[in-house]
Length: 212
Image (cartoon, rainbow, N blue to C red; front, side, top):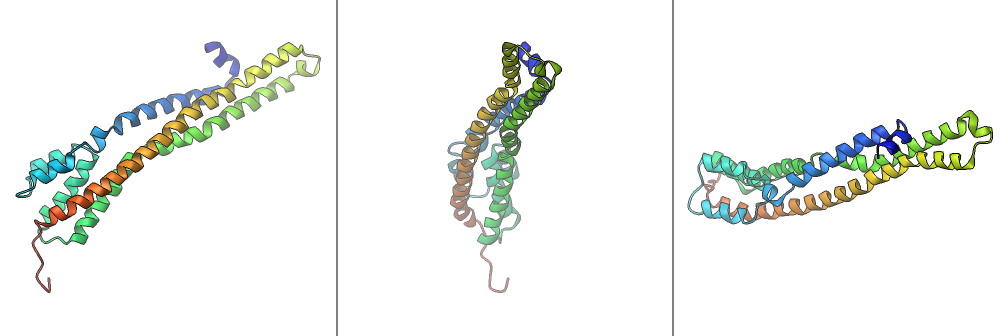
């Protein structure tokens, strides 16, 4: 492996950096996008159960906000009702939508970087191959009757960059698509859960009298 890296020349070093970054991002996203950290099972039912008779206290709401991404969205809605007992359904819905946008942005963190690596790695590999081919055919020995076997070996070495770029790009693109689909599913779950919680929280809102 080290001999291949040495023979491929300096253009392979940006690809090595891309590979390290891609692995780090994939591992980080795999850990951060687990269901227990985004949308734990039965969290909505637990929130409805805790707030069935009355709104929970600030300590419970803060604990909920640190539970998961979905918990943070729920906590935002609870805080909105606690802060404004006369809140309208539209205002509560806006609070949930704002929290949802923040949550989706958090879920998509580093995803653009991974997509950039997936799209740029083949180009970097092709760039390294072109540089290698230029060095091979531009050397004095290339025009002076180079041994065909040596020339073939030099071309194969130049192609290491392209191969390495594809090795990086293919898994990166696969994980990018996987994470994108996972985030879309989580986004839908956040929206549906919020819609179910809104009528429950509106029970605690004090009706506004005409003119208020």
